Image 1 (tube, helix red, strand yellow):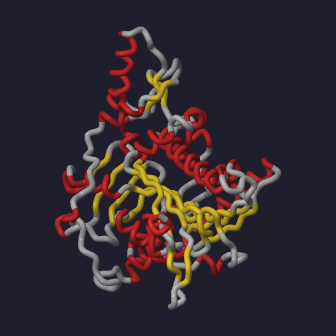
Image 2 (cartoon, one colour):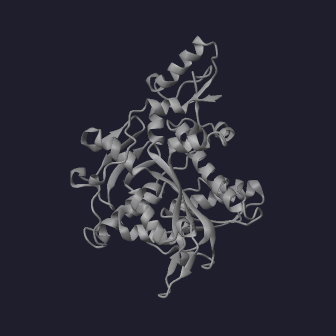
Image 3 (cartoon, helix red, strand yellow):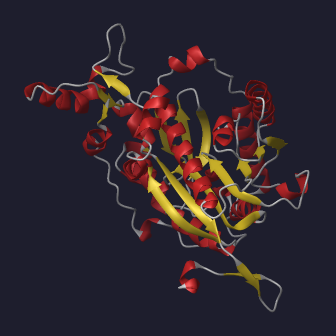
Length: 393
């Protein structure tokens, strides 16, 4: 099955350029205009309640989901990240037993991915207590099916406020990998929360270990919002609306927007100024080694992980196979129809693997990233001084 996502990407008319610096508010002191603890607590409760009340969906319901291929594509991205960075660590020691922190783990969507990556131990942490309980139940089910499985620990905590190390069964544990999938942006409600999250990520991560994840791309959201009415945009499966006045600038923290994604997300989130994240992360010994929007991530890894794309069923067949229907409206496949017609003229018709415009518009909101933990020396004040790649050169 040939894949033609490139044609879909080319057909979207969004400006991929970053907003100018004039759109970003100047940094303020830690306390100035910081959200009150009451407001932060209210938002935390909203997020936890939303994810606690998400129902566990069966296989049949997932197949009928209007975002079926989007979810599979997101799983492909996460699978590739996990495989790429576990492989990088094993380049130096193939048999190395890996320890992982899966922060903002949700219901345990990556349980089987860690099993396929042959890790030794995973600590799962999330703000939603019900989600953590479901994650543990799924883990026990997986262990019964697999027989041998990595050991695991489950922690219900607000990773933007609580010190995770105090909650580990072994506080001296060192991780080879920290993964945070579709959750880090909640920490950008305030500088204090972002620092707590980065502390939880970094303090137990070994030098040369990796922190990787996925987040909404703030620049992409801003670009689309600027072109829309009332700074709101979306389609039949998602909607985003900025909940602050962009005319007054884009706050570095607390830049709240409302996000609805069919059957998955329905709560406020926060824009992550990625340049600021890179600078903050450096203070915790985390150096950026990779970042890419999902559209570019696909181009970077599709050749190496093409079979995985097909096995996970990331793309929909166009035209629909006999007895099947397309997941979206016919107008959402104009990009595929054009290619199909061209193939007909050259007598090379084959099944086209694609995604509806509506799903691709959501997929291209996200980006993937990876940071590497740097080695350090202690300075005269007893604080760590991290050795960056530039220092090594």
